[in-house]
Length: 148
View 1 (tube, rainbow, N blue to C red):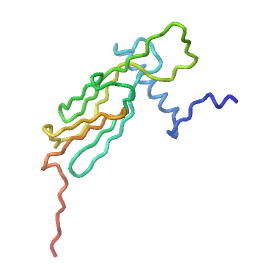
View 2: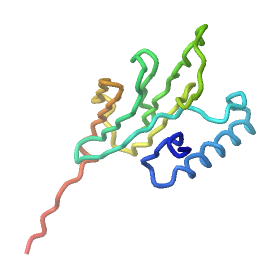
View 3: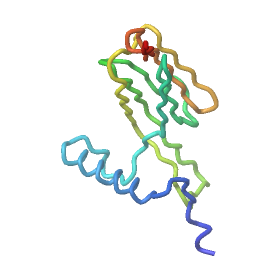
View 4: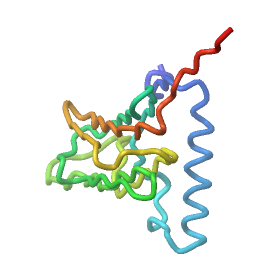
């Protein structure tokens, strides 16, 4: 059955992901930042959550080692950069399907004003990078009680 060869996508409209990647590639190539004409590039999936006292970023980086990526906080933006290396070809091994993405990546997450750069923690476990960035006390929500 032919449909068994098509990967199942959890996202509702994966065609827009492909369109976005192709547009990004087109713009990168136009402005001289291209990736050599590859059709796809590696951009790790991430989640950004906010609580009253911190931001929490989780990034999927399976198969990577902590020394293969870098985390920086600059100008209230969290920069995650790195490179996933492609497996070296081995003699006697023929690939029939290659769906994993490789290459350099950069994710820039704007966090807004009020980030406490002294209280940033990063943990990498089971292929998931979890970064916690504390908010400054002045940036935290404060409930104001109305007097009657």
